[in-house]
Image (cartoon, rainbow, N blue to C red):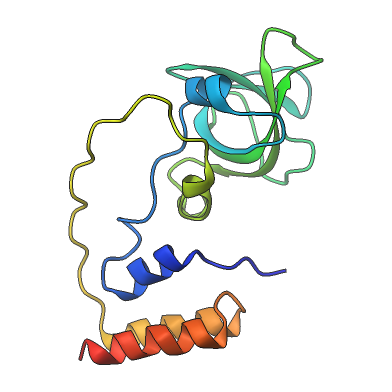
Length: 179
């Protein structure tokens, strides 16, 4: 099953901006603990602090700790790893009542291409912080890609089923209009 890219991400990709303006950072653990509801999907990042079993780990960042259940994930996880985790928030853990639990749906080593893809795909659906964040600095300009490269990338997205015909035609017109 193919996942469709949000139109905002597509516009960023094909307007010459790259994805720098579309993705945000994972949600801090403290925000997840304070604002996520049962079954919410969350994107968090942190270091594996300790292992409880072969597939239950404690993920920690500067703001708090979460218990992560990685039973259904193929990513190798070990104590000390820095991870980006996309998962389902379950609330108070039966395994460790003082922690909240997240069932891992996808995980990647922080700093990897897979982690960047997770952030780009899921950061906008993470819970919103209750307190306003300081304004972000303008993203660094990315080098402009040629129209040919952008058209090839758009064709690849269409072939993979990530954009439909109407989105493909709309983006193709924009790219050709930039010439």
